[in-house]
Length: 319
Image (cartoon, rainbow, N blue to C red):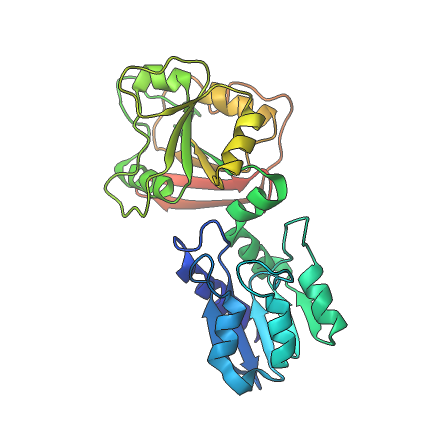
């Protein structure tokens, strides 16, 4: 039964996507005697957190209840008072958190404050714990490593080539639409200068709902072509990612070719792969990566159809 309530909290957290940045998505559900008595989610930056909305929804029924929340309740005074204190004052008896706060400056402090006040505390594990962390994979990397979460996206043929002679696209129309959705959901999109010179890509999100366009970046030595709308980033990759993080960029969709991707992999800066596999054989051309220093084990491999293609997803660094 408890899994149902945490799954509901994860569902509620999604309602804040697009309005909480740079704060994390958080959902909360209060349960007493097996019945949901209050729900909430973090709605906007600077406004009350999910736990407070759930407490307000529950009223007096919060006393003795169990809280299921996707992220450890905060213990510090920021734009809003500490949620841990609000839970203690309301008489909540048990807290089940989907994950510990990954911020090294505050990690575990909220749960410890609750324990000291006599509140029973639990952190989810297994698949639900992973779902909670996955929901915040961009934010988790941003606050813990001070760089964006990097997803490398590529399209390949069945023989592993990134081009098909005589064809403009490797993947199908449905896959290309999904790429535009991925761009719309990312803080930044990037390619290397080789791709810029060969294709002059726009990198914007088109023909899909967009709250805000991503920043569009080119890594490497310039100059950019006349009229290009891309930002040139010519420093070291790690330094550039740290600078982007300081500017609020939490997620980066890497669409560059094999050379740039290999450079990111060499520095351990790729977190997730999205590979669209098309039902075609190329017979020639570059592969997914130019090179790797050593074999690399991936985790959480999944596959699903997208039109006539198959989308493979796997993690280099799990959230």
